[in-house]
Image 1: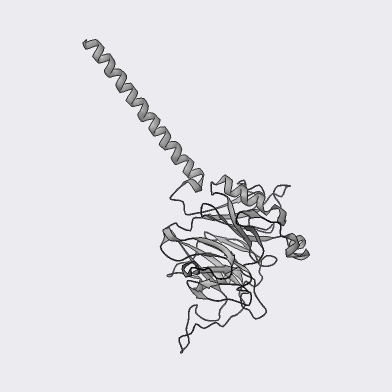
Image 2: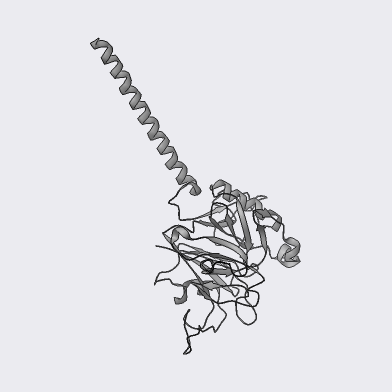
Length: 308
């Protein structure tokens, strides 16, 4: 009997050890998966990488990509526009002053107006078109204060809502949002190529120059899981690029290939909305103390991301 009891005890110990090992392997696999696939990691905040036109990570890729989670408590956001004075300044009547001047990407991401609580942004992308009056053309709102132009109700804009981090939401749509909390940080753009999950080739709408000649692109997309993809495609970027058939400047009929590839490879969900920012001489992208692209043209606005 004693021998039988010892034998049974040995089996139980072995089984317990096996289950424990399995549990650890499962936990390690889940941890590994969350690290390699940001969309499966509840702690994910922001990441920069490069891809080819299939959305696959490639250190010589032409697509310079920033993905982030708007709900991350580690992140905060702001919009900056070209002003001759301190942003949010008011006159003697208590109205916000809006004296616009021409500024370039580097100015808008490094000047005092670009800081949030004294901190410089970790990431930035060029956004709205600029008018002949030096105003941004579309709907631009910085921390709840509007700095907009003539097309603010006609063109689409991208934004991150206010509120607590876990309540934040990324939106792309035309005009002001019905809920005021959504109208907190918005930047204008033009050329909406995803609507409610449906892709559309907008080459004809862009016109010959913007579609076929000025092929460097600056864009933003949102996903079904609430993540945001920022992307700049430009052969002149300040990084090593190895051109090929699947690693070249983008035409509008290929926007979905790269964005859907990025979303799929990083577990971000399906692309829901997508929009162009100002292209041509305007694209600019900055991440973690490096400017990957600045074309030197005047910028209507920039979207800024801060990491606490």
